[in-house]
Structure formats: structure tokens, C-alpha cells
Image (cartoon, rainbow, N blue to C red; front, side):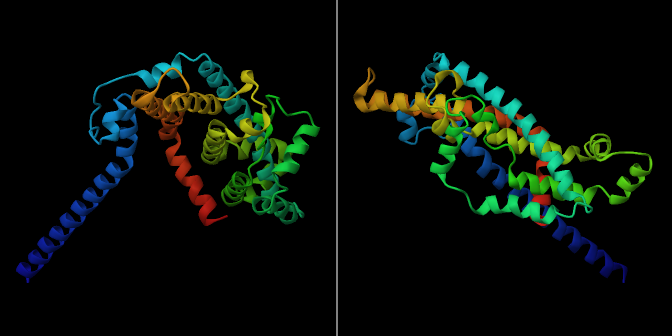
Length: 302
């Protein structure tokens, strides 16, 4: 009996080791699949693009050059673009939270009788829009064309972000807590500021990440509504202009021509990817656990 039990334990331990080994191999494979493209962009941005196109750049940079970064950093527009983008990200995200969180709280209240009807108006905008031309005419009529504020106020409330914030508050903050606070003379505004927000740090972190990433990556708004006013262009449109300029050089329309021109344009392209994504990649690890929690809230309980 003891021998049989010992055999079962050994078999179980063997199966556990096999399972653990399979999990480790799968994890390493997944990490390589995700990390290698990022690493390749880094090494390609400082390698000779002809070597990259010939498949000679695999793990380490070859014939190191910094032409791409040099072209970007020597352009004075890049600093203006960075400053503008930081302004749009910080101010825009703060205003997004100021509007989204109180709206989510109001829509989560069971004593707000019209909350379902109001929520339907928000959800309707996720599936139907008035179209680009009417939107442009509306923005023009209020004088926001070529105005810096259009980059901040364009998406003041995102419906998906509103839904996950409302769902979090509705499922996390019990109504009994408000009733207890109400007995002490607590108003809705006081309850929101002193109870709901301190208990909603997870969803606030998710909202900050969502809105900040949107403002950081938003180039279509600038493309459509800023009329190419240089002093209000965000980083993304500045990088796009630099990239298009170097592509035209590569095609023989500027001072750099031929194969060297294409090589230089490719280096600029890779450098543009690095410059535009590194700040967000540096921020993401600090809010990753909140990000995953927010995604599950929106996916499972929306």
C-alpha cells in the first residue's frame, strides 16, 4: 500500500514538473514573440537600413548610425511638438477625469431614475455619429478651428471609459455606505470626493492611462482641425511631417537621393517609432495591474 502511494506521488510530481516546464517554455516563447519586435525596432533605428533590408540585422545593430535620431532632434519643431503634446495629455486627461468620474457616479446611483435613459444617449454615440463634415462645420461654427483647445476638448468624455467607471462604482461602492454617510449629513458631492474617489484608485488609474494614451496618440484631430498652425501641432503630426519630408528626399526630391536616401528615410522611420512610443512604454508598467483590472471590469460587467 505504501509502495503504491509512493508511486502515485512520484507520478504526480513528474506530471507537475512536466506541466511547470510547459508553462515556462510557453511563457518564454510568448515573451520572445512580444519583445523581439520591440527590440528589432530599437536596433533597426541605429543600424544601416540597407543591412536591415537584407536581413543582416537580427539580434544586434550593424553599421551603427544615428542619422534618424539626428534628423529628428535637430528639428526645432520636435521640441514644440513635445511641449504641446505634454500640455494636451496633462490638461486633457485632468478635464476628462473631472467630467467622466462625476458622470459615472451619477449614472451609478440607483435613486437617479433617468440613468438608463441618459446612458442610452451615451451608448448611442458609440454606434452612430453625425459624420465628419457636420462635425467639422460644428467645430468651425464655435471657432475652434486652428485653436489649441480643440486638441483638449475634442473627446471630453469617452463612452467606453464612462461605462467602465460607472460599472466599477456601481459594483464596488455599496449603497449602504452612502446611506450611512447620508445620516451624518453627507451630500452627493461630499460623498463623491471623500468616499468614492479614495476607494476608486484602481479605476482612476485605468482612466488616466486610457485618456493619456488617447491624447498622446491623437494626430487625426490635429490633422483635421488645426489648419497646420505650427505652434499648436502635437508631437505625432510633427513626426509625420519629418517622416514625409525624408520620404520625399529618398524619392529624389531633395538633397539626399538614391539608395542612401532610402536608407536614411528608413532610419528616420524607425527612429520616429521609438520617439513616439517610448514615453508611453515607460509609464505603462506602473499602472499595468490597474489596467488589467479595468479591462476585466469593462469586458465582464459592462
